[in-house]
Amino acid sequence: MEKELKIGIVGCGAIGKDHCRRLINNIAGCTVVAVSDYVAEAADETAKLYGIKSYGNDCDGMIKDPDVEAVVITSIDPTHHDYVMKTLAEEKWCFCEKPLSQNAKDCEEIMAREQEIGKKLVQVGFMRRYDTGYAEMKRIISSGEIGKPLLIKAAHRNVSQGPGFKTENGITNVAIHELDICRWLLDDEYEDGQVVKVRQTSNTTEYDNPQVVLLRTKNGCFIDVEIQCADGYGYDIQCEVVCENGTVKLPDPYAVVRRSRPDPNKLPGESMPIMVDWKDRFIDAYDIEFNDWVEAVHEGKLRGPSSWDGYVACVAGDALNESRGSSEFKKIDTIEKPDMYK
Ligand code: NAP
Image (cartoon, rainbow, N blue to C red; front, side):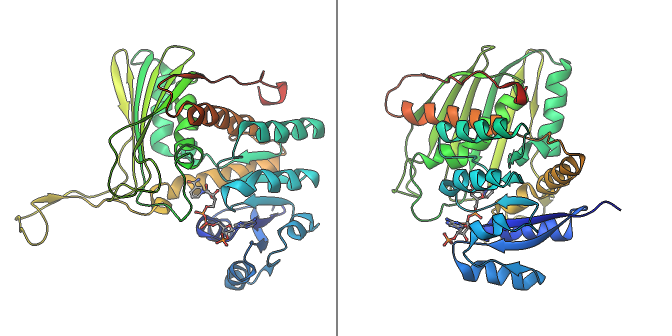
């Protein structure tokens, strides 16, 4: 039996707690040995649940603990870059939730450090690549069975956001998933992009909502993504890729369609449940993602979404945020891909 990978978690909020449960209960070959959070009580509470060590708010101390072999970063977005760099300073394995950083420049620093070490140590939490629906779409597109891809029509709709959410976070925090999955599905890179402000919903007034993201790829594909950060009804992820001789569409999650006698005060004649919690929508993908990461760490070579992938998404995000209000497509220019990520 292989030695278990000993993991420390930074950030015990919604996804931090969920990943802690997942890593301890569902994933073979690893265990969580310590947790930490900006708010000491959040770490203490999570640690108590599993009888593991709490570092309270000493996140840096936890990263340095020789007993911690790998760090999972699930704190808020603006803290990711700093914790990744601290993990790399210890030359430890790092799983960082999306986004890798708030901007492309910070990601370049992370890649430079990995190259100095001479090894890919960082994986980014783009879990959609592990979703069976997206994976089957990619298989069909790559097979060429229905011709080359031409267009993507996608939607990312969320129920609500926490306090302090800003218009640009619609790109850096929400659309970042599409910025990764679209280039992965198409096996193509972005040429340019722009954000368009459309008629606004009354669900929120603090930030632009919805926003529409338009992207063009090097091979000439056109992508449009509707981003709703507060849609008033559910967590709804849609994606259709139009190819020359057919289309592929992301299936809805498992949901039984109910048909019964219509009752105006209760259910309509036909209905199906809508998910409201993002944790449920990709629940299997998160498990597959961590199984693959732990296995890859044991093999000594990461194969999941890398710092490069985190970087490209941030380059596109920077260009989109820069384009807001200009009615112009902005170039999405990356540095040359370092050999390590080829
Ligand atoms: P959350 O519930 O707000 O949890 C974040 C936690 O980090 C909170 O406990 C927060 O404490 C703590 N924190 C804040 N500043 C910190 C610091 N400097 N050092 C350490 N901990 C700090 O947010 P969440 O929904 O779990 O999201 C966490 C991260 O996961 C985000 O980056 C998000 O983008 C990502 N995420 C990814 C997915 C996905 O589908 N892959 C889904 C959800 C979230 P306070 O409560 O005091 O702020």
